[in-house]
Image (cartoon, rainbow, N blue to C red; front, side, top):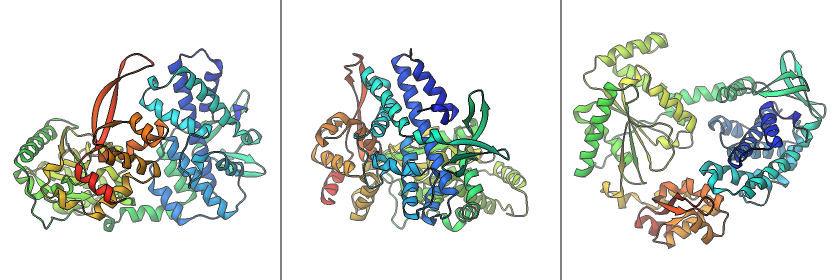
Length: 515
C-alpha cells in the first residue's frame, strides 16, 4: 500500500517502522500507535460519511451524541460497525463503500459477533490491550508478528490509494469513485513535496462537536436543549427507611469530612471526598441521608447521575447546581450575565458560615471525558468553595480524584441482604455480565472460593488471555481483588498480579440462582 494516502501522523509512524533499528519496546509502542491512529482515521471517515448521507437514523444520532469521544480503538470500531450496519439498510452510494466488505473479514466489525483472535485486526487489538499493561507481557516474536499484522491490515485499505484529496474553497475533500466526502472539521490538506497529504486536526473532542454542529445542526441543537432541561435532573430524595451508620463508619466519615473541609479552605484542589464501595454497601443511602450526616458541617445538596441517558453530561449537572445555588443564595437567574451571576454567587458563597456539601451519586456512569470536565470545573471559583462528595462503585473508573477517600464494605450497610432483590441482581448482571465470555467467567467465579488470576480464568474458560483481561476490567466492581507477585519468564523478575473472587458469598448464591 502507498502510505501517502494516509494522514501525515500515520505516515511518520510507518516510516519509523520501515527504517527499523528500534529497540523491541519502542517498536511495540510504534505498532500500538499505528493501530490507534489508523482505526480512529477510519472511524472519522465513517462518521463524516454518515453525517453527510441522505438519510439519518434518529436512534443512531442519539447514540452518537450520547457517546463520549472514542479513545480506545475498540470504541471507534463499535461506531464503525453501527454506521456500516446503517448503510447496509439504506443502500446509499458511498465514498467508503469498500469498507462494507471489511466485516466479512474482520469479526470486530460485525455487531452480532464477539471479538475473537481469528483475524489480524483482532490480534492487533489484543496486542494493544497487552501493551497498556506493559510490554513485559510480550515477546520479541509476538511484537514482530503484530508488525506484520499492521502491514496486512493497511493492505486491506488499498482502495484509498486510488482516492484523491482536493482543496476546494479552502476546504478539504476526499474524491473516490466520482463521489466527494468533505473532511472538515477533522482533517485539513496541505501541499508537500510528494503531493497533497492529510494532516490530522488536533482539536480532538472539539472537532467532534464541530462536526455535529456543522452536519446535524438541527438535531444536535435540540439534543443540547433537551440535555440542559431541568426535568432531566434527578435530585436524591430522603429515603423513607432510617439510615443506620455503624460506629466505625461514623468515625471514618467524620474524619474524612473534616479533612476535606479543611482542605477545601486551604488547598486549591482539595474540595472532593470520594466515597467508594461494592454494590449494596450503602452509597446511595448515605447520599440520601446527607442532610442528617453532615450536621454542622454544611448545607447539603444531592444529585444522581442517571445511567445511560444524556443527563450523564457535566453540562447538565453544572446547569442544575448553578440554578439551585442561585435560588438558595437568592441570586436572580436571567437578570444578570453569566459572569455577573458567577460573581454574585461567589460573593454570597464567601459570606456563608457553613459550606455547601454537594453529593453526586453514580459518578461512574459519567463518561471519562465528562468526568475530566467536571474535575476541572469543581476547582474553579466560585465552585472551589463548595465541598463535593462523589459516590461510586469500587473499581469503576472515575476521572475525578478526591483529596480524601473512604471505602464502604458490605457490613457497613445494615440492610445489605435486603438490598439484593432479584431485580437488583439482574441489573448487576446486565451491567457487568453482559457477554458470553463474561457469563463463562461469572460461572467460574461462582464455582470457586479461591482467588483466581486472569491466566487461571483463561485456562478454565478456554479463552484468549487478553480477552479475559479486557472482560475482567468490566467485571471488577463485582470482585474482591487480591494483589500479589508472580515470576516473569520473560524478564526473570517479580511482576504484579491481580487475583479475583466475587466480593461476597451472598452474591455467589444469588448469581447461581439468576442463571
